[in-house]
Image (cartoon, rainbow over all chains, first blue to last red; front, side, top):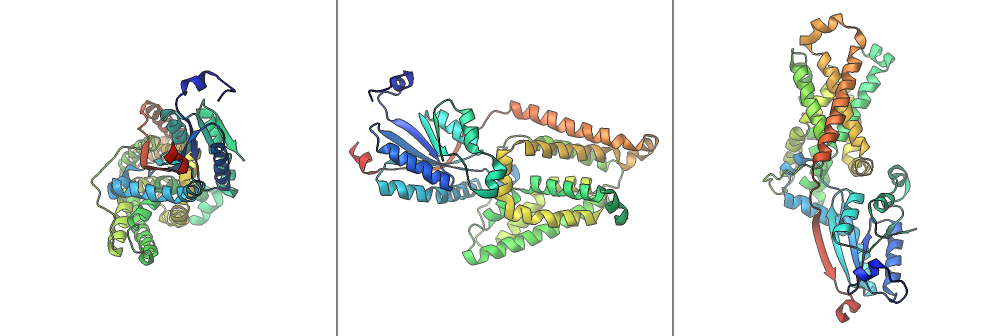
Length: 156
Length: 247
């Protein structure tokens, strides 16, 4: 704790560093988790929050035919399926963590959640899913970095 | 007639327009299909999807067939064009907050198929008008466009949703396309045939461009005004690790 003392350190004095780890099931997310696990071994205590963002059912029409509960359950199932392997690894490592499934546009939602919940740092993979998809999509990570002022660690 | 159309490339332009519309306005149909079949036993799920999609295509073709007939009547293209402008502006808005008292997902095959077909019919009315406008009276075009786009909607919907999430300008372009078609539709209405006869043939280009411009400008303006909805968290929890218990 003694090394760097800037304003941010003082502000968050008395609580653990909140680290947000958005994951998407890709190998890059696996390595982002490796990084977070390494951080938990450090001297500074951190609070880990695992996050999966699910794309919304955008149309109001769709909501006319399927109940909100069913839509929420659908997003929950899809999100939990993504989180499951990461939760297993955190459990195995004996690390305490919180987990969240949010619905919304990916980069925007990650950034808003990080701001609203006053996170200190975001750790995520540089790339999303591999191959052609990635080539078409560009990087969510870049978009998140652009939207946030807090440190964002991009793991390769 | 088709030989001529094929030769001047207009056929393919129209096909591309129809495919673009089907994908843009139909992306979430796939989600409804998935949701409607959620509670079916594993074995029946694929059957539900298959029959639901089949029924939806059949109904869609029928609806468009009638729409094409109707559009030859005076003033109906004008009405269709105005409706299409509105649909285009609506496409550019952030998620609408509609919460109807929808029924729970059905747990039997027939119920699932019924939900898919009815939902598709209601959800694709916008689609029907847009496609009918792009097709300019040619049912063959419509059939072809639908055949190409259905597999994309059913199997590629996640990719389409992701693309739209990552590149919002795709949606803006889509809104512009709807406005373009609306503009073309407006000047080809039967009631305006007398007036249009005296104007040069290229007049439908500026008309289409005006439609596209209107949708993009109006749509973005309204979207900017919309306030962001609160973040939607559908699940969360906490797992205590060994260290968590100590601390």
